[in-house]
Length: 162
Image 1 (cartoon, rainbow, N blue to C red):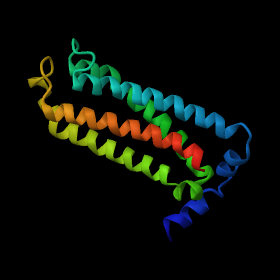
Image 2 (cartoon, helix red, strand yellow):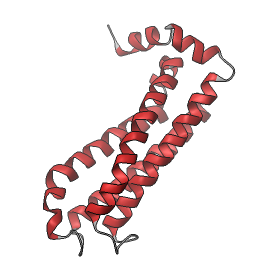
Image 3 (cartoon, rainbow, N blue to C red):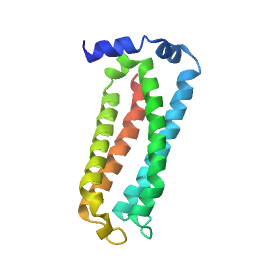
């Protein structure tokens, strides 16, 4: 069975039909998705801007991350559930949509960037927590910011191409 066939089948489930056919359900879920993404990206940007030395330089990276990242993960969970519901309503259409594919690719790359940061850079944070951030950490923050900007732009683009 192909991925396209799975998308065709997914959009025929009762909940997907209800979302697609309701005059208020899709916009409500989309609003929740967008608000959750604002929290995700805003909290990630705080940490990324600290890594880049643009903002929050008086705060330690560990303290800022400890305060921001619980919100990030909660909001990400809400955004992911809402996004899956939105996807299910027109799965075949989204599957064929290039902005959607770009968004998903950049989400995956942002996840890999975060994983690389957590496994390779953050274990040494005690060495630079209150001082100059090493190039690798600044690079991870810059890549993260760029990827999240593309996620937002591609997500917005989806609405004009479906």
